[in-house]
Amino acid sequence: MKLRILRLCIFVAMATAIHAEDFLDSLDETLTFSVLNDRAQVRLSGALDIEYYYVDEPPFGLVNSTANNLFNPRLSLFLDAQFGPKIYFFAQARVDRGFDPASDDVRMRLDEYAVRFTPWEDGRLSIQLGKFSPIIGNWMARHLSWDNPFITAPLPYEHITKISEIEVPTSAAEFTHDFGADTAYEYNPVIWSADYATGVSVSGRLGRFEYAAEMKNSALSARPESWDATEIGFDHPTFSARIGWRPTIAWNLGVSASRGPYMRPEVEPLLPRGRGIGDYMQTVFGQDISFAKGHFQIWAELYEARFEVPNVGNADTLAYYIETKYKFTPEFFAALRWNHQLFDNVSDGLGGKIAWGHDLWRADAAIGYRFTPHTQLKLQYSMESEDGPRGQSHAFGAQFTVRF
Image (cartoon, rainbow, N blue to C red; front, side, top):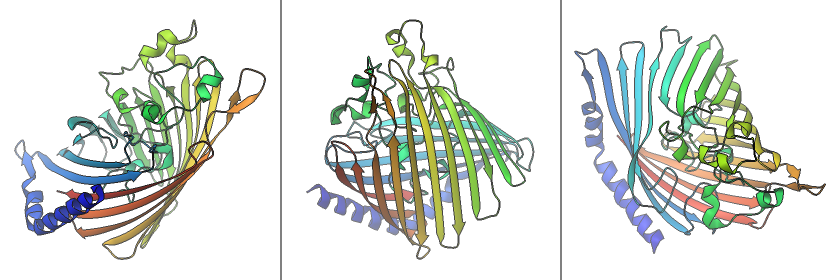
């Protein structure tokens, strides 16, 4: 029944969007204007995403629902403003059921807002202050629905591990115990999706080299509730950096690093005596590579992460993905992605070792079609296999986007 409703919704949305193409073109012009006596150029834009997910129970990734079928609409609104050649401001607000696909009530939220100062035209230095995605890796540059060839994020950005920012395990046995499907969303991945944490960054380009460094109020694994400075201050900041090299126009290579406390302040009374949240860090080292030529594109990232866990010790994991996209025509494309994550052992407290997570792999396949410059449909199938009680599971997703 829900699948038939999805087909009907997508068909109506596609027909309406294609019929409204002239209106969307004129809306682009209307939402671009000048202010302050033409000293500032302002543009308003947005995207309406209509998503449907079918997932095996329990769901994998950051789907915050235990239902097999999930309908997830989302409205994103963007503001871009250029004040002369040196100052740029941007913001993003969303109306949805939660930052991640969920079955909650609809609400509005301000996800991003930042101001960027670029003193020189050659781009050697930019300073940015606000709430924005991190500077590591290469997926962040294409994480929005119109740019992402897939509906979901790569495995390092959404696979929930046994790391918790709100619980303190009393032993390795408690830490490695499998959690239930109804509590999975309370735990953390290596990187939580787009990670719109608050802070300041510096970045620039010097010849073929790129550099970026930032200080944020929360770690890469922090959940959306921890990204606002009003929720989590800067008493225990996270520092991240990336160095990139473009040997040719087609290639882009980079290395990243990040380190900072991953636990929330309210956990401090539960920590071992004499310890604070600043004693338990998340450390991440990453490598990324991308290539683009003609109709073909490829991206890959590898992250080595260490969590210092109270009463347990160091919990290490390695996660990577390789993603390809091919454009058959300007409108039609297909994409494949291989994801893999491995977990190291921790001491079991009895002189032995025990794995703190279940190794797994996931294969994603997607096709997409752009009906017009404003409308796009994507279909995705995913198969995940875990070396644990979950075993093999499957998921299907559909996403129709109208941008304006």
